[in-house]
Amino acid sequence: MSKPVVQASHGKGNSSREEQRVRTSRPKSSDEPVPVTPVVTGPAAGNALSGLIAVINLQTRSYKSVVSRLLFGAIERSQPGVRLWNGAGDTRPGGLVIGDMPSDLSGADWQRQTALADQLVIPVPDDVLAANAAQWLLDRLAAGGRPDLAEAAVVVAIQTGRDRKLARRIVRHFRARTAKVIRVRLRQDTVPTGNDSLCRPLARAVLREMEQTDRDLAVRDYKMAVS
Image (tube, rainbow, N blue to C red; front, top):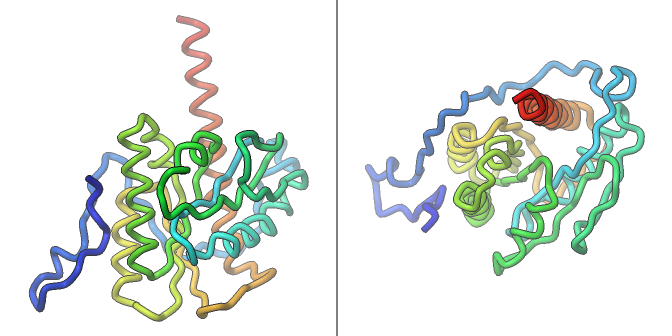
């Protein structure tokens, strides 16, 4: 059974119980702000990408659509053919696609959603239910034969200011579990548009993970061909 990121507090002195640390062999990555510089990945760099970037959190009100639009706006500059998709159906469009995957409180649809994905982007606001839903999904992927997808995930830690202590625990927890944690500060019920300071670090992290996956697959295919 998946251990929650956050458990109910039973009084003072139980802070160690509130956060379940996850240790993996994957190197920890920093979530420090990245200087705003042009994204060089893309056709201009001779490296047009393809695949599905699934923006996913099964919990409702997890800012999935906001993150999808931010990511689409930033990636479109270096990957002009990118498309935004609503995640419905069992087939996906070709080319590079950002999927705004539907919420699924029953947990019954996660296999379909992740089976289509090449890269996961998991929005996690400072909300207990959303944090535990993200942890549940990562555990299912690891147990279901897709630890690579879980480890390469990029978590977007949405910090609204409503629970700063929880926001810090989310960053620490998912930094140890996934490839990258990007902190995004948003006021509640705010829908930002065209904000480079929010968009570009996230786009850069996602495109780097996709490029690394492409390189890993190329190395694997080469080894298989010469063996």
